[in-house]
Figure 1 (cartoon, helix red, strand yellow):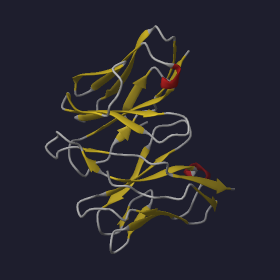
Figure 2: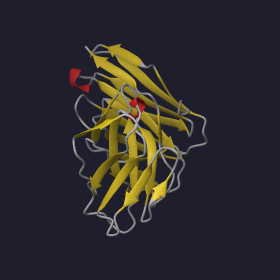
Figure 3: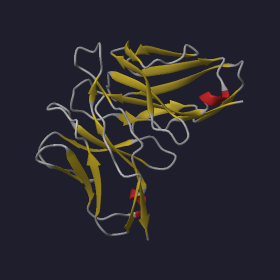
Figure 4: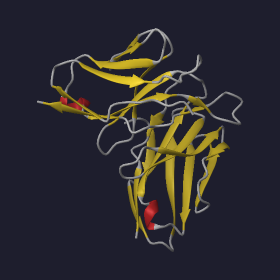
Length: 116
Length: 113
């Protein structure tokens, strides 16, 4: 399984941008980079994903390095509700699925604390 | 609200009990997953289903028995569990296409006494 490395924790102030880094030096050419977050007492929630180009959606932006060995999740203005564990995941294809399905293998993620 | 509903939200069971966890979605998804999240450990994938067919069992002990009667429902049958099986059990679903995201339920907090 492809692996990712993230800092255990990060801290931010409310209303400021947050850059959450992720290293994935063993990424293969077809691996998509997925980000999920888990708020306290909830299941994980999809944030964003990408392959090569930078991506933007209503929640965040994903900046992918040219060599794809690292990526950064950007929250443009952190709010208290963004306090969560953020997971950077490389999608794995499920065996015996004929390539039609993938699974998400979660690491420990980054615990983001947002200060008021 | 993700559209993936898990019941019950909390469950306390003895080691000799038999219970079942239920996951339901009416999002038209055709892939469903069970994950286990123990305290201070990453989420662990347990089972994967494609169109009701189990395609992956991640070396899960036989005291956990999944069932997927149709694409909208997924069960996890539990029997003779151990205290170390206490954890948050999460269900997820998605459409079988490589680029779609997974939707997770709120989880069932299981305590084995």
